[in-house]
Image (cartoon, rainbow, N blue to C red; front, side, top):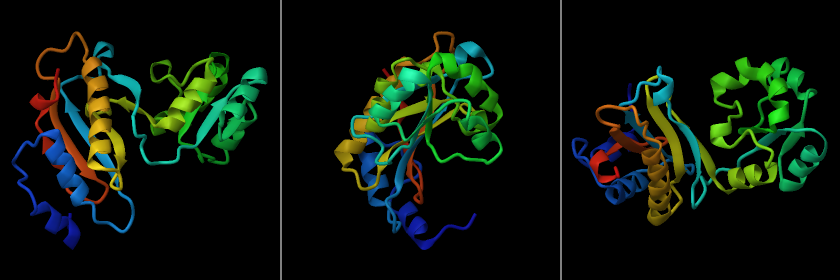
Length: 231
């Protein structure tokens, strides 16, 4: 893959073989985010888990202290008083059965997070083939299947992100924008890594966090020493 001049110059500005501490990695990545748009700062964590085993699955959510820098659109599946509550709490879209054909047939996906009250999961389940592959299915572990729709919406709007293993046992999550200060990015990183450390499966044998890479949307990755962030 051929990279542009900015990427190539950025890659020369640090030692790719070095495992950096968090503060240095954040500084390098932020300084190398030179695109004409506000790049997302992303974290990629390779774990020693085997997600094929239910007891080694990792899935949860955490509110980043400084948010993600992205405006998040929330869709809530609810009826009656809970639908009214969701509207009042600032949900971008609220509905029930009538949304099924709009999503299934029309391909409407103009939302970033889906919240559902437990009684609506039978309806939402019909969208599994559409929402599942996109990581949009509501899940109790992520706090998106709940009767407390007000709290769910408030947390999401405040910067709540979900973390989970992909098929290769890697966690991919945003921790902010290049326009954030180094302190804000570091705070968000520490909050997220703390939650992931606590989510370590009890049955895991061997190394939990095998590698941690911090990168911006268009920039090269900087490796963080996993031993410096484990509890």
